[in-house]
Length: 93
Image (cartoon, rainbow, N blue to C red):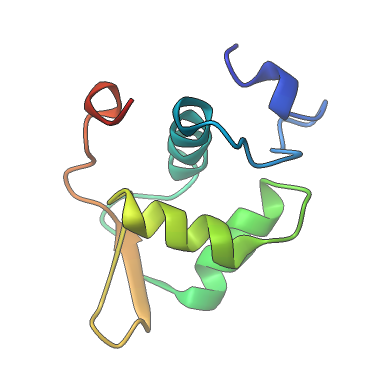
């Protein structure tokens, strides 16, 4: 509902919001597509993100998700997993 203007008919993010509140909502929307309790390679995270947005910038999305603690990664950056626990969206807004 809040993201409606940022989503295409398939539910893919068609642009990354500039305003902080909408950006955080968009990042949580993408985080819902990542399974908890599973390790992913950077490529696997990129593939998930690419399948849920149309502007072809998984690196920015991945970094933003990491910065907001929606994704964690190993020190060497090779293995990613969903943040656990996820931060409370309301406290970030």
